[in-house]
Structures are given as C-alpha cells and as structure tokens.
Length: 394
Ligand code: GLA
Image (cartoon, rainbow, N blue to C red):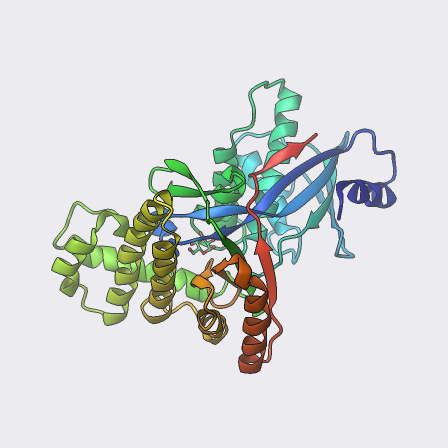
C-alpha cells in the first residue's frame, strides 16, 4: 500500500487525524552469496530490497501498545509492563519481543498505536521478520530518544543486534546477524560484504552490466523455527570442537582456511559434521572471491561462484530440498542465466538468479512452467531492485 493509504487505514482503525502520524520503514534482503556462514563468524554478502515493512505509528499517553497489520484482522493489545508475556502470539510476537528486549536494555518503551504494512513475502526467505524487527526497533528507539531528549541519530547497527537478540531469546530462533544487519544498513545498488565476527563491513556496488537480479519464490514455505536450522548450528559447533584438537587457537569455522581444512579435516570423525564444515569453509572463501570478481566487473565468475554455492548447500550442507533444487535446475537450462542459487536459510523460500536482461522474460516463462511441472507449485518472480536500509520517512 502507498503511505497515504496506510495512514487513512490507520485513522479508520484507531480514529483521530493524520496529524501526528509517523512512518518508519525497513526492508527485506536477498543474500547474494555466503550462506550459513554468519553464525560461523564468516562473511556474508546480502543486499537490502525495495520490498519492506512500513509501520505507521502514533504515540499514546498511557502504557498500551496496540498492533494491527493491513492484511490481518486481529488487533493485539499489550501493556508495556507485561512485555515478557507475549511470546506465544501467532502474530505480534516480533514487535512485542523487540519492545521487551529494548526495555531490558534500558530503553523507555512508549505506548503507541501501530499499523504494519508488508511487501516482503512471508516465509519466503527474504527476511520479512528482520524487516518487522528493525522497523519496530527504530520506531521505539526514536520515541525513546524524543522522550529523553537524546539528539544523536539512532545507531542502526544496534537496531540490527536488538533484532537478532529478539529472534534468539524471544522467538526461539538461533539466527545469525545477517538479515537484521542488511535490513538496517543496506544501501541502494549495493551489497554489503559483512564480517560477522567483527561487524566490519564494506558496501560493494552491485553493478551487473546487462544483467538483472531475478528472485524466484518456490512458494514452499520455509520455517526457520524448524529444528533443522538449529541442528546445522550444533553440527558446526561439533566441527569446531573436533578441529580444536589440532588447531587450539580457533574459535569458529571462519578461523579455518581451505588449506588448513584440507590438512586437518580428517580429525572430524563424523562424516556429516565434516561435510557441514567443508561447506562453511569454502563458502566463506567464495564470498571473498565473489567480491573480487564484482570489483573487476567479472559477472561471469560471480555467477559461477553462485552456482558452486548452491551445489555445496545441496550436497554438503543439505538445506535445499526438492523445490529449491528444481527451481535452480530449471534456471540453469536458460542460456541467459549467469548464476543461480538458493538464498536464505533454505528448505524452501527463494532462489536468487543473475540473468541477462534480454533473457528475463524467457526466464520467467520457462522456469515457471518447468518448475510447476516438476512440483505442482506456482512460483512467483520478482525482478528485483535493491533499496536502502531502515529509516524514518518524513
Ligand atoms: C537465515 C538466518 C541468517 C542466516 C541465513 C543462512 O536467514 O536468519 O542469520 O544464517 O539463514 O545464511
């Protein structure tokens, strides 16, 4: 919805005039390469999208928070002194989780009426939850600063960390920092090369010449809460423990170079754990090589690295599944496809593809048809533009 429309809807629901309404927005993300590396202290390379969460907000004089979304009927009412108790809400737990985590950190959580409008597809692996978290955190931080007379701008990296903590501690998903960081810190026409160990980052122009980024949604919902994500994390921890026997100085898989891994991989006795570690070690290396390729305008090499990333996520990390594999297989049949891989956690969700501009129509038609024939599902395609990170819209 356009902002003017959301504001109208806000007044229809909550009454009053549009005069004191504030608008905050934070985007979803697509990860170009570097999958399941963030919680291993490695590099990721996500870009913020134009698809985003917009929240229209009005402060209240009491301690009540009311929440509604433009596409849901339910209206949630919460109190700022009971924020610990909304963990099991089907909708609204991200927002109230953010408020809870911020309150624990000493933010003054101001009562408010809120209306959310999302254009990031839900459960599609494009971080719709991070978009909600970061826009909400920015809103509460802005209101906190106004109440306390703090003049400095909100620190967006802190908003990302609050988002991650909320997922980890309030929503029970042990995710890394990538999604929230991209949502908070993205920049139009750029991807972020982020070192997840130090949070040092570099904005890299996504200049793709005569190519476009096409995101393909398998429409197979992924559920991050699903135990598989946390299972992969434990397998990586097990790999670190085993490798420490010969490399006591390491703290995470990002500390292991491909050369060292080849030298010592046999100390990892469990074959599954060894495969998981192999993916992570080489995937981190692929991020470095991808950025080098892009900086030389070598889109072709970047595409090959994306392909290798998918194959590794399929064969070694085992997080793709039939739908994502079918989508990638169909994409690779198109001559104008430069690279194709799953993006996000996996087990459903989306693929990201670099496609020659003059092949985009053919891509959407043929990949869509082939995918439906194989899976029975009707996919969606977004010829995607990158956008800016979270901000207040004035
Ligand atoms: C999800 C998590 C991220 C990251 C990716 C996999 O999106 O939220 O932290 O681990 O999966 O790369």
